[in-house]
Image (tube, rainbow, N blue to C red; front, side, top):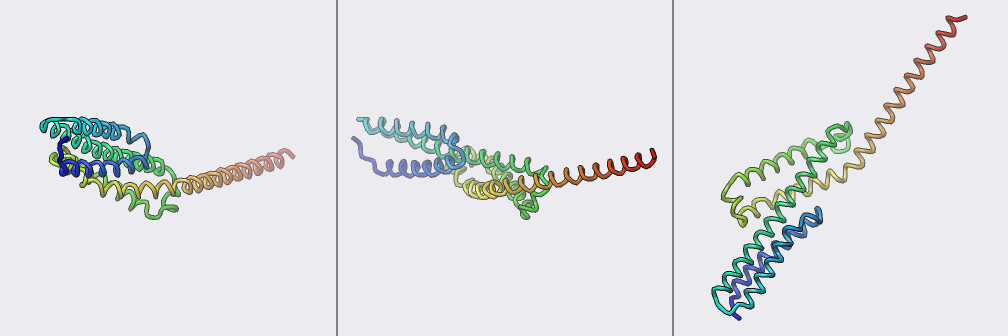
Length: 199
């Protein structure tokens, strides 16, 4: 077996980064991690091949492949997290648009929407930078801050959702009761008027 501790240290660091991103993606949605987990399977495959290689060239080649798969796992988990969080935030944005008590429950709702738009623009800007988007090692640190901000934003929307819906239902029921009362009053007046005129 060939001893190259620095290569293993790099691979171990990449693997740890991938694991952190996998756990975060899993917290958002368990299904998001499947592509990244597959990449980590390839890491294990190439690591085992490297350890069983007798020649230096085969070792270096397999360790490099393992590192590339670890980088891809980091990227896949990071990208899946971003896409899922943006999608969740956008669903809430569409649903809350038609509910009148959104700003009553979330007085800072407009600020949350501004933060969402800022995150969208920032992520789009990183993606537009070919150097960052094509080099996963540069892309990953650039978008990490957006994941944290989006997680907080989505958590706020998730917590407010039941209260917003409950208040909206109460208002709708109150409105329908008022309309029904008004219709009943008008009908009562019309019936009274008709009975008065018939006498």
